[in-house]
Length: 330
Image (cartoon, rainbow, N blue to C red; front, side, top):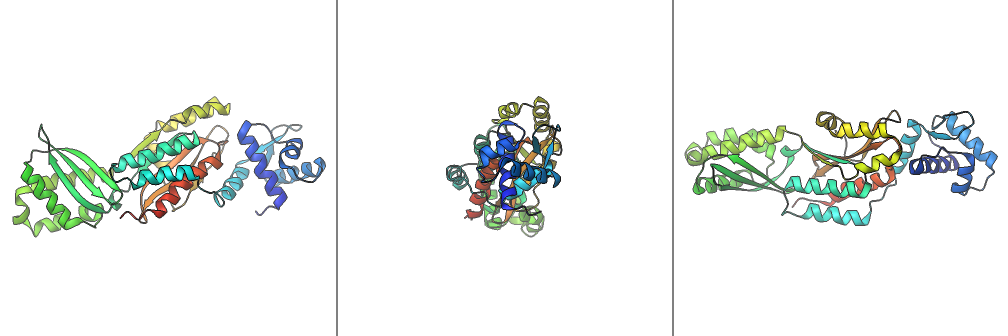
């Protein structure tokens, strides 16, 4: 529903004040904060109208009003349409993303840490798009104790794995060259799907290092099926500032439930999304995709109470979305 400019200003200001200090909204508070050129009686009528429209509710007959879920949703939707990324965090995220010396998991974890510090709320990353990574090179290095170190260079960073395998330096080098030659520029998913067919036609060439290739593919398949979850808890203390211990406990419990996190972290589109808590003691989540070259690699989300600071969270996530739009992965 489209609100008049005055109603829009009153509602957004009222919600921001409630988020700040949990004080119910009164006509006197609106008069003081909104600086509108109208009487207290007019403001009272506007608050009554916003309540009748479902954006505010009164806990007590003589008390002030607080936002409803519908009110929060109106506020967040308007916020997301006008949010501008912070330049400071934008540069931090761009520096992290542009670094090809970090592993992909380190890059994603660093982005989550920046967002958590910027918002002071717990931040979660679920990485589930390994198959979309575009390959550049392979380096397979023999280690002691019958293990090999695998470094898979992609246009978004590298993947590192240690695998149980006994192989000579020559076998590892041959396997590295073979995989780079045949799959550079292709995605991990393409390689997994087509490696068997390629091997069938090149048995003589790869016979000496076939075991290395097969072990690597098996490891990638397992990695691709696993949803890697990184939780940055730096902002957890912020939850206790909201004067609602039960809400904080519920959010902390969600952070300990990886299955629940993977479910709520699913992002459908290419922009920031929000799922609002239905009740005061439930948790809200604002989330965004981590996308490179149009391929979704992960989801990042900030979890907090219904009354969390949506403005600072939207700004921080906007940084991630905008930074990744500029990344070509070359």
